[in-house]
Amino acid sequence: MNAGMRDFTLRNVYITGGSAGIGLAVARQMAKRGANIIVFARTRHKLEAALREVQRERVSSDQRFGYRVLDVCEHAMVQAVMGEAAQTFGPPGVLINCAGRAIPHAFEDIPFTQFDETLRINLYGTWNTVAALVPAMYAAGGSIVNVASMAAFMGVFGYSDYCASKFGVLGLSEVLRQELRRYGISVHVLCPPDTDTPGFAVENLTKPPETKAISAGARIMTADEVARALIRGMERGRFMIIPGLEGKLAYFMKRHFPTVLDLMMKTTIRKAQMTPT
Image (cartoon, rainbow, N blue to C red; front, side, top):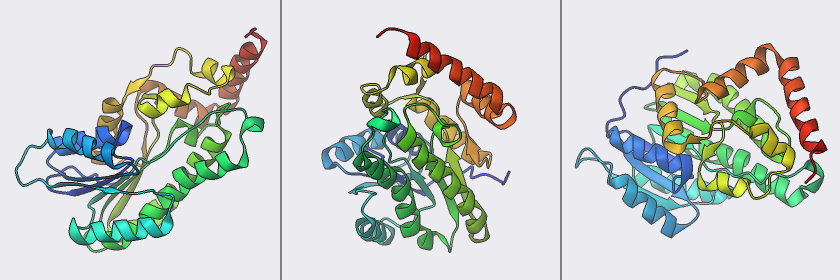
């Protein structure tokens, strides 16, 4: 564990996927800690509404706020938009990659186009923003948080494309942690459980019965709870940030008792498949 970042006062915090969900919650929490906030997402009117929410949390007249329209999938666009932001807003002290999506289906029901788009948003999007902004962070250092999921360390029925992308985010983050340490840049990966966000509501529209059975009874965290856990993890210098007791238990089981965890999942899936629909 490395020494964490504890003072966010007037730090430039860049947040992709910052117009809703966990990204917006993090922006609000960071604003309460005195940070300068710039959020990125694809839809201008959502960004404008999000920025108004974030600005209400300011604690100092010195804080600065902004937004940019951005599709993290588009490499050239990310280079241009992030380059302009680093020049005009100032280089990031913190980069938080929250842009992502999931559309659960059984593997055989996922077309290549969905697989390709999921990888482009969740994995390529993370690569694109880090590649665009890390050079601006070399001089002063800082922190990067890549938002993954519990599906980054355990495969879950119905999430084949999503798990592939989030396993990739975790692997990329492990490498970046090693390579960027020499520049004073710490890297963290957030692995939240089910979280009450607009994206989660969309996921529930297509979940197979087996997927619903696996998560049945699990506590759904709020976006603000996850955001606070993210910031605590940064402050404590943790690489793997897993909000909530259930998530931590799942990670422990996956590392130390994978056979037991697999048996539990298999039993739950079989019961769901035997239940008439």
